[in-house]
Length: 73
Image (cartoon, rainbow, N blue to C red; front, side, top):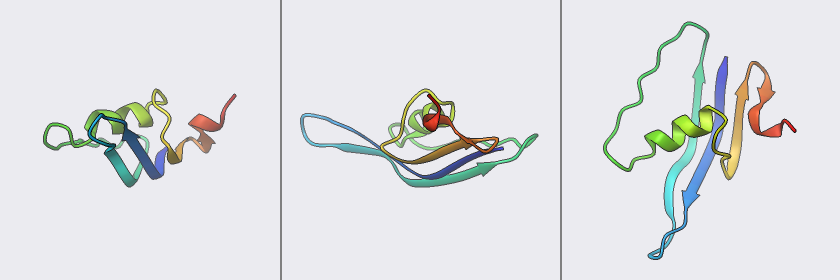
């Protein structure tokens, strides 16, 4: 099972920070299909990168089969 718990991610820009994810929570069970939709720049890729263990969120947890992805050494 994949679980995202209160995930936050921002990116710095010259004009100020851009919040890509704000308090996102999600749970996906084995065999379940989930579609991620939205307009350009809304955080879809950031969500998928964080869920896949490729981008550490600033806050929150990404848990796969009971293990925190970003808590592993």
